[in-house]
Amino acid sequence: MDDKNTNRTIEYYNKYADRYSEVTRNADMSDIYKRFEEHLKPGSRILDLGCGSGRDSKYFLDKGYDVVSLDASEAMCRKTQELTGKEAVHMRIENMNYENEFDAVWACASMLHVDKGDMIKIFAKVMKALKIDGVFYASWKYGKGEQTRDDGRTFANYTETKVCDMVYSVSGAVLEDVWTSQDVRTDRIGQGHLWVNVLVKKTRVVITEKEFLNIFWKQYQIIEKDVRISSEYVDIHKSNFPTFSSRYINMFLNICSNIDSLIEIYCKMVEEDDYRKKYNIHDRLTPVLRKFPAIRLDAVRTIDTFEDIELKPFSAFVDGRIADWWNDYNLVKHVRSEKNEKTGKYNFQSANQKNVLTALAAYFIVCNRIYEEICEISATPKKLLKSKLFLYVKNGE
Image (cartoon, rainbow, N blue to C red; front, side, top):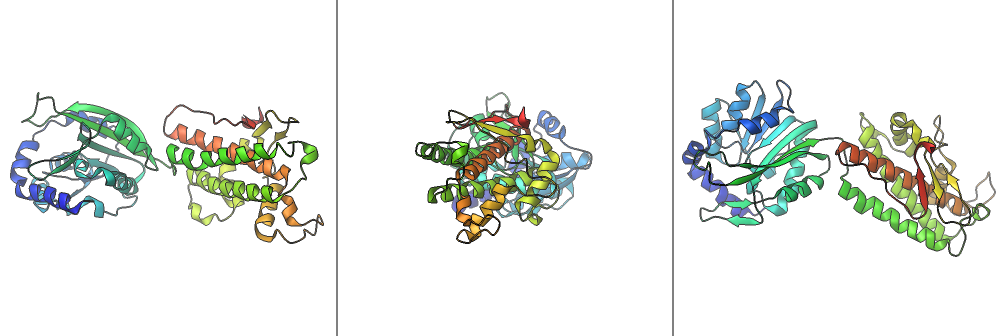
C-alpha cells in the first residue's frame, strides 16, 4: 500500500475526529442495516472494519450482536469507545490477521481508502476473517479511478461492474447483492452523491470461475488440441489403443497431474474434514464419490473419430480399488524404465493411446463437474463445457 497516502488519510481522521463524528453519527443507515441483518443470526459476531465514530458498532451492540470494532485512526478508536463503552482495536486494515473468526464483516465507507492495486489482497483478508457462510458488507463512493483530495485523503471509486469483477476474483467470495444508494449523511442529503454497496457471502468455493477457466480449462483445451493433432498420425481406434510414444508420455503425465490438482480442489469443495489429511487420489476421491456416486457412471463419447468410442474413466473406482489407468500413470511417472512383472512390458509402454484418451476423458468430466459446482454455489447459470473431441454424457444417460 502507498504508506504516504495512507498516513495522510489517517492523519486527517486523527485531526478531524470530532467534526467527522458529528456529521456521520446521525446518518440514517436503516435500509442498509436491514439488508445486512437478513443474513445474521442472533448473537452473530461482527467485525466493524473501519468503525469510525462508532455509530454502526453501537447499533449492532444495541441489537445484541458481539462486535469487534477496528480502525486505523487512534482518535476514531477513542470516539468509538466513548460512544459504545467498549475498547476498539487500533490497527490498519492491511495488518489484520483474523481467521474464521467472524459471522459477518461490516466495512461501511472504510475500504474506499484502500489503493485499488491492493484491494484484492485486502478483500482476501476479509474472506479469511469470515467463517464459512459468513457475510461481508462494503461500500465505496460511486465513480471511476482514484482521487486525492486537498485534505490529503485518497479515495478509490468503483462502479457496480468493477465491484462485481473484484468479487469474482476472490476465492470463496460469492456475490449476494450489489446496488447503488444516495448519500445519507445529514449534510449531503439530496445532493446526488451516490454510493455503490455490495453484500458478499463466503462459501466453500476454493477456486473462482475465472481462476478455473484460466488455469484448468485452458490447459485442457491445449492438451486436447495436442491429442487431436496426434490422431492425424495414429487414428483414434481401439486397434491402436496399445500404441505408445514419448509424446504420449508427456501428454499422460500432464493430464494426470492436472486431474490430481482438480480432484484435490473437488475434495476441498465437498469434504467437511481437513482435506490436508488426504494424500492420494483414493483418499481425495472418496468424499467426492460419497456425495456424487453417479460420477462413476459419467461417460464421454468421441466425436469425429475413426471409431466411436465410449469411455467411463471413474467406473473402476469402487470399494477402494484404483482404476488401471491411474495405476499406470503412477508407474509411468515413477518407474517408467522398469519392466512390469504382470505384463512383461516396460512401464513406459503404458503411456499408450487408451490411457491418454481415458485420462483426458476423466479430465473433461471433472472439469464439467467442478464447473457445475462453482456455478451452483455462486448462483450463476449452469453451463456445460464443450469439447471438440468428446461428448459428455452425465450419469451415463
